[in-house]
Structure formats: C-alpha cells, structure tokens
Image (tube, rainbow, N blue to C red):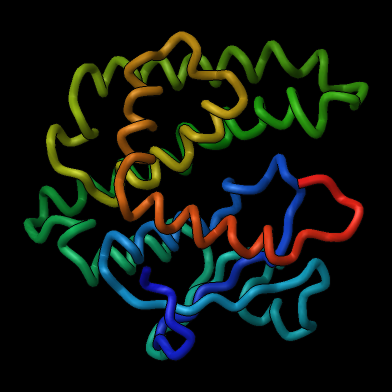
Length: 225
C-alpha cells in the first residue's frame, strides 16, 4: 500500500459518488499508475462542493489533480504520462517503445473513450431523456466499430505491444472497463480478457481497494451502497 499521509505526491479524489460511478472515477487511473511505479502518494478528498480556489488547479472542477511539489497538472492522460516518465515499469526507455506506449494512451482517450462513454451514458443515466433513444443507434454503431478495430489489432497478444505492459495498456484497460460495465464487450472476448488481465494485477487491486475505501467511509446516511 503506497498511501502515505506525508508523501510528496498529492492526488485529488472525490469522497463519495453514486454507486454506478464507484470504481470508475478517474483518480483510479492515477492511483493505479502510482502503484505500478512504486511511488508513495497521499489523497486529498473533495466533497461535492469544491473549494472556491480549486478551479485554479482544475478549470473544469473535476478530479484528479496531481501535485508532487515540482509539477502541478490535471487530466488523467497528462498525469499518467508524467508518472510514466518517472518509472520504466510504465514507459520503456527506448524512444520507439516509449512513444508506441504513449500512442495507445492517446488512442484510449481519443479513439475509444468518447464513443463508449457516451453509449454507456445513453443506456444508464441518460436513458430517460427524450433524445436518448434516437441517439443510441448512432453511438452503438461507432462504439462497436472502434471496439472491433481494437479487438482486431490486439488479437491474441497479452498486451497492446505484445508482452510488455505499459501506460498505454493501463489507460486502455481503464477505458474498456466502461465498455465492460455497460455490456459493450459482449462480442469481443479478447478485449474482455484483456481487461481481466489488467484488473488481476496487484497494483490495480490495491488502487481499487483504496479508491473504494473512501466511498465506504463517507457513505451518506439513507443512501444504499
């Protein structure tokens, strides 16, 4: 467990979110990366009402923010790349390997996540909206198209760049968990297995346990877990 109250690295997270979002908030991406890298960190928990000055750190009022006393940044992709620069466990040191890993991180964020995220919302929190039903086939098409392309590229490999786990795999697993939780991986056995391999890593299990512990501790009275 790398959570230390006196650690130099600080990550912001939410003290509670509704059950459908638990295990999915993006501070988990950063926690996992820090666990893989073996870097101690502390967590600053934020309530629903953020401090007024928080937007100076995160203009969109989201989490996570990252601060190690030298670098203060937001956006999970930027944070993961920075952490990867500190640890060969996440980013190879050769230029080709490094940038091939980074390309997969951006692919997860730009080519995969927008489609599967919105498709998941259409089947969940947005499902009662009048516009959700007519929008669903379009997002279903593009989500399945992107997942099919990714499935074909992954094939039978263990990780996206064969046998080497990188920050690209970490981000792709995190993004694909959205698809898995919303039933979008039903036709892609290799992607489902890819997610399970990521979730089986000790660093992920520890990060998830710490992420979920805050929600259990701050469970509002009268709200079902």
